[in-house]
Image (cartoon, rainbow, N blue to C red):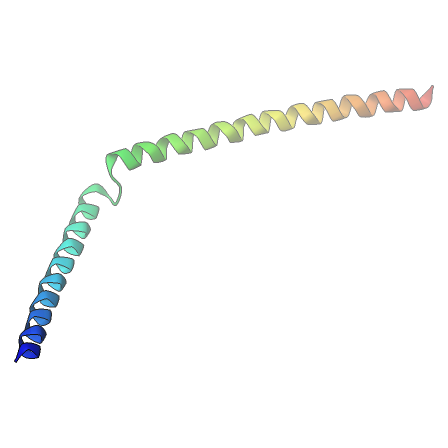
Length: 84
């Protein structure tokens, strides 16, 4: 007798859990469709990160140019010292 009530209780609890899970999934899908998948804060953070990466890339490009110029200067000095 007790096991029958336990089985019914587990079945009802499982059903309620399943309905709640499906509801939350549907709400999540609707919110994702409305916001384009990202919240405003996430979009702003993504834009800031993208700008930082672009700034780093530009800084590295400038540094590469400077290093190439220094290498050229050093090579020219070595040539002059070798020819003396």
